[in-house]
Amino acid sequence: MREYPQRLHHQTPGWVKDGALFHIRIRTETTNTPPLTEEKPALSLLDAARRYHELGHWWCELFLLMPDHVHALLAFPRTSAMSDTLRNWKRITTRLHQVQWQSTYFDHRIRNAKAGQEARLYIRRNPVVKGLCATEDDWPWWWSALG
Image 1: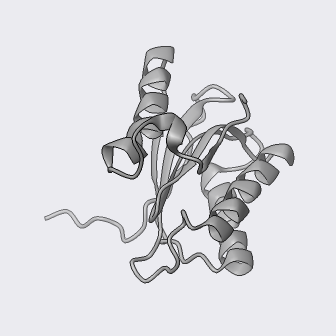
Image 2 (image 1 turned 135 degrees about the vertical axis):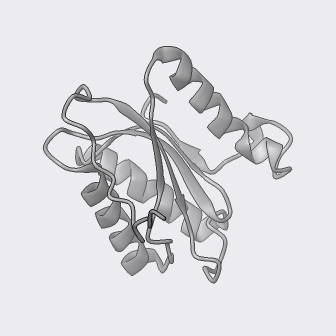
């Protein structure tokens, strides 16, 4: 019987084009308090995502907070590994904003424009589907470099 590793090692294959977009989901530990969508942590986390974008650590097409997880559409520069960038972001938000993240995360490479559009719609509709707001425009806890 094959055993699975305790931790996934997220590495972008060398053949993936520079600037490839990834759907990322990062969950908090079940003991994390308060929810990410309370005003103080939400504003701080959105600012941290914007700051990482401005510093060139990632290109942020969409970053959305849910009470216990984050959805993002991100592209990473070829000079830094996705896993290192996300680990560093989680580390700094833990230290500065006391968020307790799970050690792993989900990533899925967006392979074409249609998949990108579907991922954007899925992420923006997530708060509506979960009954947290009536429409996508009612959800305040998201940011995009696209405006």
